View 1 (cartoon, rainbow over the protein chains, first blue to last red):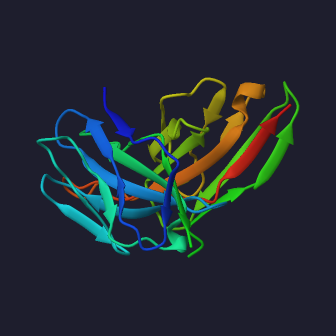
View 2 (tube, chains in turn red, orange):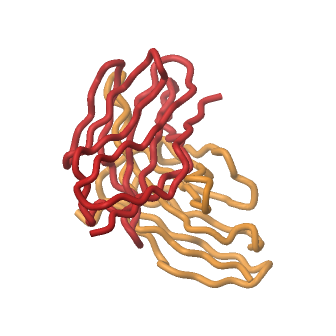
Length: 113
Length: 116
């Protein structure tokens, strides 16, 4: 079945450091891929998405490219801020009509000043 | 728009008690779903609905019941609470797929449930 695997956290970085959070997936057909962010005490918010191979999603300085050949959707940011501290979830929807999201286990990012 | 609202924010139950977690959205979204979030396991789908009167099971449906009588509301019922149902519960909604593209899901703020 479909699945998502994320790198284990927590990830601790200093402010202005480069961020990569790895995400790989297993899916049949042509899934859409998403990154969601959860700030402390809040629900999930969509950070970015990509709906077909080689698409690049971007938002708030974060980027991720849909790589079908490596089944990956790694999240990157060139210079993190303390306010980026949150839990990041990679997710996919399969080829069915329901749009059900399948999530990775989440990666906690802590940015220190 | 209030978006997706959930009540209550916190709840403590005793084993065997029943309760209903409320979820409502004012965006006229057809698709709604319930997830539970547990440490190290991401979010797992409990039940979902693609429209009023239509519901289906997700990955972890046992011990939970849902109904969808209106587009706006999608309550989740715990029939007989167990400690294993201690979790944070999120409701989400989404418009239906646009062609081949899946639309984003909008999440509520969550309900933190403890079962003693």
